[in-house]
Length: 460
Image 1: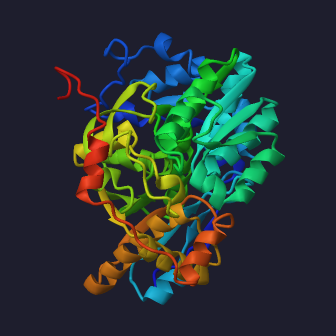
Image 2: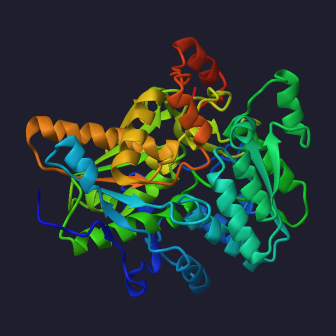
C-alpha cells in the first residue's frame, strides 16, 4: 500500500472555494445555444426570465465568465454542511486486492442526503433576492425535491414539487421529508395541469418521467403570478453551482499530493458528474493534465451510449427551449426501475458537447450489477449508497480490478452523490431476488427518437 493518508480529509472554512467555476469559459467549442421553440433562434435572457429567476437566467447563458463569486449568504449556508469529505476507500482497496488508490467525494452529509443542496441553496437565494412569491420544480428519486424544500424553508419561499409518480409510490418517506419542509408534493403526471391531463388521457397508468414532471412544473410556474421554475440538473447554471464539488476535491487532492488518473461519476442529467469533473476537465481543456473521465448511466435509460446528439425538448410536453444534447427523445418513458434520478431522457448540453468532442467516455450498467457493487461498498466502507451513486461505484470497482490485472497503481476518484436510506425497497428487491434488469430494445428507442423535432436547416 502507498504512503498512508487520512481516511477522511476535510478542508477548513478558510480553504473552501469562494467562487464557482464555469466550465464553458474554457471550452474551445461551446455547447450549441438553446433555441426558442417559437422562433427557432437562440434564446435570450429576456426569453427565459418568465420561467427562471433573472440572475439564474444570466448565469444560464453566460459562456465567457470563468468564475462567479459565491454570495456571502450562500457561503454561510454552505458552512452548515460543507466542506464535504474526500475519503480514501482503504477497505475497498484491500478487499479488491488492487494496487489502485480509490478516493471518493461524499456528498451525503446533509438532510437532503445528496449533492443537490449545493444548487438548491443558490437557486432559492436568487429567488428570494428577486422577491418571488413561490417556486415550482420536478423531482425523480426525490433528492432534488428534498434539497429544494430544505432551501425554500430556510428562505421562507412556498414550493410546489411534481414528483415522478413511480418514485412517489416507491419512496413515500421522501415525500414526507419534503412535506416536513412545507413543500406541496404532487405525483406526476397529475390532473392539476393541462399537460398532466393530456399525458393521463393518453396513458392513464403512466408511471411518469422527469420530462413529464418538468412540463407540469413549468406550466404551474408560468401560470402563477410571482412564481418561477427551478431545475436540479441538466442546466448550465446547475453545473456551475455544483462545481463546488470538484473544486473542493481538487484542493483536497493537492493537499495529498495526488491527482486522479480516472474520474468517475453517475450520469442522469449531469449535475453531479459536471460538478465533480469541472476543475479537472479545465486542466484537460487547457492541456495541463489528461485524466480519463467516465460517465456511468443505467442501461435502462442510456442517453449517452445509445442516444442521439440532437436538438430536443427538455420536457415531455414540449414547452421548454430546445437543447442540443444526447437524448432518447422527449417522448421516451423509461422503465420504472430503481435507477432513481438517472431516468431523464437527455443529458446536460455541456457534458453532451464534451462527450461528442471526445473529452470523456460513457458506459452503461445493468441494475443488478449496480446493486452488487452497492452492497459490496456498504460492507467495506460502512456507507449505504444511493442507487444513483452505486452506478459510479460499479465502474470504479471495475477500473480498480483492471488495475489489479495490469499491475498499474492508478488513482481513481469517484463521486458518491448521496445515501440510500430512502431506497430500501430497491435494496429489498435486490436481496429477495425480485430485481430484474431492463434494457430497451431498438424499437422502443425508435419510438423516442421519432419524437425528436424536425428542424429544417438545423436538424432533419
